[in-house]
Structures are given as structure tokens and as C-alpha cells.
Length: 622
Image (tube, rainbow, N blue to C red; front, side, top):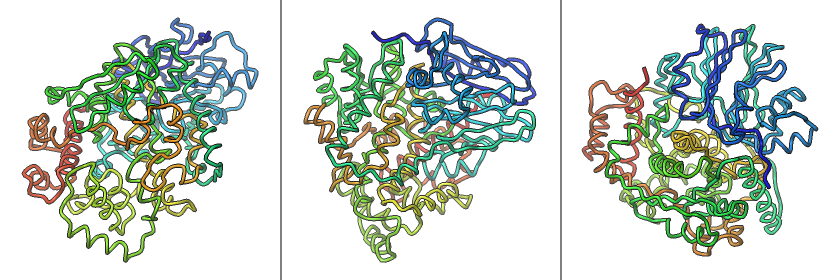
């Protein structure tokens, strides 16, 4: 029988250091309510304020309330440390409560912030050492749980959500960051829409001296370290180790909840493996599949997995006839512009899942760790980061002669895009073309330059590493797209409904294991996620094992021209738009009127990206 542990955290946290307000601000609790509707906590000490909102996942009593105080330490914590009872045993830590929040305080007393390297979990926390007057703000290895920090000359404000931080502090808009957002489709690394506000990056913690107000940023986990390491296991040993690590990761994420745990189940390998392993731990596991109006229906494949493991399966049919009336609410949840249109079905499936469960497993991170996207295939064969001038010029010439590709999943579209990104001299253009591909080719439409300085520096740095082109691409995607776009999308979609998402592929051991695997275990020929497919042969129906990566099939082109047309035109053609301060307004008008030579898919992506910017701007909280 599983031991009941005194944990509880799906939460929102907020705090200040040396901020002028000295009493609890009810706006904080209201703004974070959806992250933790069950209980609110507040504590002020010295020049520090700490806020916490709680949703009960474990310890359904009140014994683990936050802010939690232990000796000279006070903490507010959002997330879960899945291996914390193992760590108590390892370090012989004794306490009456089995709260993982308390485990953090016990370990901090023992070893300070070196404790982070021991954690398998998702977390963002603020820990105040009152004796030494030091504040520590930390995030997990992948950046699963958000934390934003506003820094001024004499104060710090931090928050789980940008909307709350903006409402309290009213920071100025960062137009350079918004320009980069329009180009890339998400905010890269620590960038946010606001001046003076940074997102704390994954694998980092900030140490603040609350007396001198000086601070220092410390990197405690670097993904690139594991990409530089070589793992030469043969195929059989690789599969055995991967199987064991994923089993452990799934088990930990189930055992650290006292409420029912379910699983998002698409027709893909990643969620299929997680579901198969979870079903061995949970009797009658609840599974949820989205059935979206689009070109491909994965619910048939998902149903095969559900039948194989006898899960309580629900197909959630999403129709978009009323999307126009919901879209603003969905986008406003993010607190910043968000161009990922799969946030829409994610929002709906989370809403339906919450009716049955409070904790849900997903397959996030598998594609970026094991090479799941079709665009990775050419990087296995050729180093586009260091292509010759002849290769680039030839690719440009051929692509300019070819007709525009309009069918998203076709072989022609794949070949066309390959030629496009192979033709760029600039590495940032090449990467953006190979990934999000939004404003690439329309750089002259921007009113502000230079663009993309931060990501350009990161790409140049990573290109200097002695690793393969495929590993460079995977590393950049992990650090930028997964961190800045995909994880926030799922966190916001689930948190909007007080549902906690857990990602077994982002467990500590898998993050340290997968990067060093040989490229042949990830891409062979045109086959993606090779080692996951081989593992899937043990667990999943044969029809599913060889399916290509699809993700949500979003009919974005149709939405832009039909369901969302009226609301998008209202925002894009209104007076005093914010985008006209960043890009030429006549360019957007020409796109709307189809006067620009561009594929229908890219046109829709650009318009949706700009629309999301306008929705964010026009609905800033007051």
C-alpha cells in the first residue's frame, strides 16, 4: 500500500524583497487563485514578504501549510520533489511530517543549495535564510514550474505568473523583446515582455543578500554538459536502461500524489509509453484523448492503447464553432504573447480532464531529448550549422524557383523547407527557419534592429561545441523552444483549470541519460525517435510504433479564415495597435489581403502570432 505523504503542492508563489508595500496584498491571492484555490498563506519577516496559494495534491490535512518555517528558514514552494523520501533515507533525515517542502529545508540545513543536484522534481521556490539574511530563488532542470523576477535598484519582486507581477508593479514594455517574439514565436530564455523583468532560467538559482540587496546568479545544472558526454551503450543495453529509468520516473510521479492520477494519451509513442507504464501502477488508469477537427484523427490509435491496458478512457471531442468567443480568455491566461496555437486544444483537454482528476501525466520533453521532429532528420545527415557557401547559394537558387509549399505534412513541403533553411548564411535565420518559421524572410518588415541578439549568441556558442549537428539542434530546442514555448503552454493550460501536469521524460535521470546517446539511437535514415520506437515494441500496438510524429493537427489556416477571422480582424485592424511600433502595419494588411507571396500555413502563423501580441497588449490587467 502506498504511504500517505504530507505533501500538497500545486501552487502559486509570490514575494518581495525590500518592496514598499508592507501588508498582504489581496490582488496577489486573487491573481494566483487558479494555481491554488484551497488555501492562502502570507508571512512578512525583516524586509521580505512571502505569499503562497495551495491546491491539495498530497497531505489533504493542513499540516504542511505554507509559507513553511523550520528553525531559521522560511520557504514558499511550487512543485514536487518526487524522490524526497528516498533522500530522507539516504541522508538519515528525521521529522514528524513527511512533507517534501520540509525535506527541502532539512537538506538545506545539511548542505545548502548543493541539495538541488539531488532533486528529481519540478519546482520553483523561494527560500529565506533569516539568520544569514539570504534569499534563494530556484528552478528545476527543465523549467517546468515558472518564476519571474522584477529587479530594480533597491527591491525584488518575484511571481509564478506575469499577470500578477504586472498588476502589482506595472513594469514598462520591452519592445525589443516583443520584436524577437514576433520573429521566433516565443520568448527566448530569460526574456519577457517587460523591462527589468526576467524569467529565472532552468537550472539556475538567484541568491539575494537582503541587507545589501546585492545578488548573484548561479547555474547549478547545464544541459550542454550532458550533450558533451558520450554514452556508447549498445542497442540492447540502451533499451534496458531507458526502460528502467522511464519506469522509475513514471512510478515516482504517481506515488507522490494522494489524488487520482490520469494520463493524456495521444496516438503517439511518448504518451503511449507513459500511459503503458502508468497503467501497470494504477488500476483502471484514467486516460484522455483529444479529437480535433483536422486532417488526422489520432483517437483511433489512442483507443488501441487504452484497450490494451484497460484504462478508463475518454475521447474529448473539440469543436471550434465558438472558438472566437473563447480565444481571448485562453490567450490571456499566459501573461505574455503566445503564438503556439496548440495551446487551444491543450486548454480544452485540461478543462475536461479536471472534471475527473487533479494530476495528469504527459509525454512532454521526449521529442527534444530523443529526436522526435521530422525536421531533425536532415541534421543527422548534414551539418547545416557549417554548410559551405556553395550549398547555401545552390539551396537559395533552387528554392526561389520552386512554387510555394502549402500542404503541411507533404513530402514536397518537407523538401521545400529543407531547401529554405539550407540557404541561409545567418545561423539564427537557419535555426528559426528550421523550427518555428514565422517571420523568417521578412526581416525588412521590422522597424527595430538588431533582432535576436540573445538567441544568436547562444546559437553561436553551441555551434562551437564539439558535438554533432543533430545534438546542437536538440540542445537549442531544449533550451529555447521547450523552455520558452512548450512547457509554459502546458503549465498554463493545466493551471488554468487547477490541474497539475507531470512529465516523466523530464525526470532527473533521463535528462542526464538521453543527451549523451549516440545519434543512431535517435535518428536512423528518415526514422525519428529510434530508441523510443524500439522500446515501444515491448509496450504498444504495432500500428502506433511506426506512426510519424504529428502532434495536434491544428486547422490553423481554416481558423484564421473562418472561426477566428472576425476577432482577429478586430484586433489587427484596430487603431493604436502595438505591433505597428515593431513591424510595418501595411505588411499585416497585405498578408490579410493575400498580397504577399507566402504559403497559407506561414501566413496563418504570422497573423496568429501578431494577433496574440495584440490580445496580450489590449488586455493587460489594471
